[in-house]
Length: 80
Image 1 (cartoon, rainbow, N blue to C red):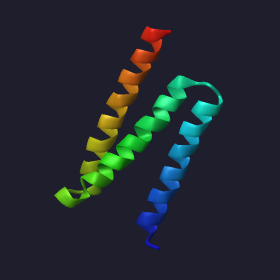
Image 2: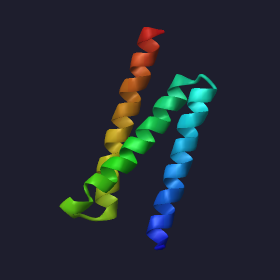
Image 3: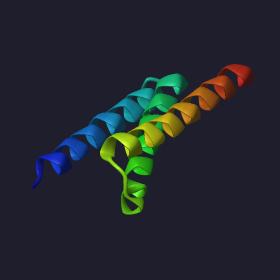
Image 4: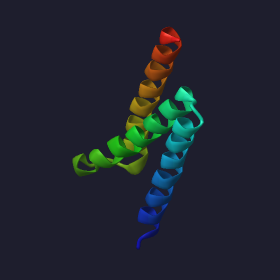
């Protein structure tokens, strides 16, 4: 297994852990964070066929993931 692949698998495991902790601890903001991190990782990998550096794809992916987190937290606090 390539080191890059191992790092990605480790990141996904950590991000899933954050999401699961948020669900089990009934902390919607932490759950949103875990979802945003996973969305960022997914977008980063979805953009791979388009080309571009890992840094560029990471910036795009995690920016969109961060936007998801911000909107989710705003919705959580607006509803609560």
